[in-house]
Image 1 (cartoon, rainbow, N blue to C red):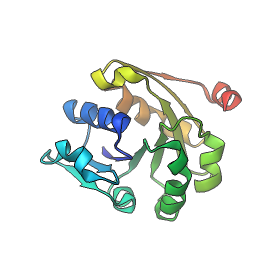
Image 2: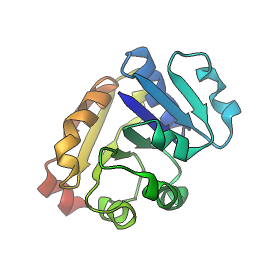
Image 3: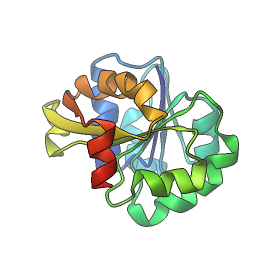
Length: 164
């Protein structure tokens, strides 16, 4: 899998460590404004560190967003013109609903929200997943990713839509 983690803070690092440890990637692009804080990932095979979110989008099929909620909309607006029909958008952003994501990138995108818990750092997370209608077609991809970091529970679209 070609995965990018956009915003490699604490949660992003935990996800990256789990993906690397479990050999779940073909390419992993990690973005952060300050690369010094993710220098521990230098030297891993097929792991790219960058401050450039557009580079991450271009080199990946799956985009996991772990930025601060206040920055998410700006990041989405910047990358939206560079998304292709295959990109899967996985948001771990608290308080940023699927309709808000759709308003920026379009409802025709594969959009999935992932809500992991803190046990993700030790590979024991219980991650709840929900998606828009398009994202339901790719929910198995998100399950495959997060099952390597613990367990997942996919919330059916109807229930997910009611809770957004």
